[in-house]
Image (cartoon, rainbow over all chains, first blue to last red; front, side):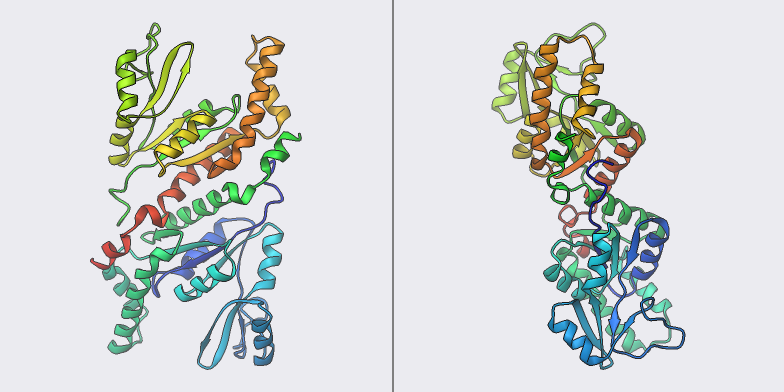
Length: 206
Length: 206
């Protein structure tokens, strides 16, 4: 379509409390849409059997990670079990420049860091239909002590309260409906004048 | 769905240059979607044979129109052939309060007035794929002198240039695709946090 072809891809942060179902939803949206990718994290931890560089993670050493961080090549990062995990900027820029939309599965604090470093991103918070339902989803993961579960739930409650920091909120009640709403958000964002500035001149010139 | 049920409807201004196909698109979106209405104008001109009050227009006299205007009950208005035409606020407020989305077929200057008087509205500018295509669409209407046609085209060109005043731009290349994009914009706007403020408390309370 005129003016829309050649448009840049979007970066879409999909966030929300632990247990809300970010991973499942992202896989569903990726399955449904063409010209869509997900961001692959960079980490200093060692690959586990079967994990592939550039598919599951970009594996790197601590020194290289810190160099990337220093150079502003990491959008957001976190430390877990003494290992670094981050969102690398360069692969994302390459995809977006080629017109591919990129989904980012990200924690609530991570999302806030991305908003700072990539103000053009679309931010979306998945919420559970109710706290009771979130408890059910978290407990289905099983294998946790009551104490660990309580800790997780307190954190999740705090994350739900952060919804106001996001542009969009989607209540994840039903996989199909949630995926449909996220697709609508992506389609609508592509139509925002701010992302199409100058389109009127292109149209008037033809 | 939690938090979304009972939500207010949206007012969506569908604007764009003369000849771009606003009326056809609005009819198509209305045909496809449930819980959707279009705004009916109020006018001082006499009903034509077959026209119904409350269906085609709200018919009123000049004195009543001016009283409504004075009372802030008209979102935008225009004078054509010495008759007043306007968008009445009350029927629209009633629909929106009941959760119905309302489409408004409106000129570019009219849209700017609505933005002032109803800042919560969604504004959308339909654009032709090219100036050549707009010329074709305008000339298909036929029955106009070359001079009238030239006047119309100059005005349409100025209207295309106003696209930057709108939140969204949709290139009307294909009826189905354009209707799909407008539906995506409506769905996405319903997910904006600003329209769902407080949803997190509702979720945490259940």
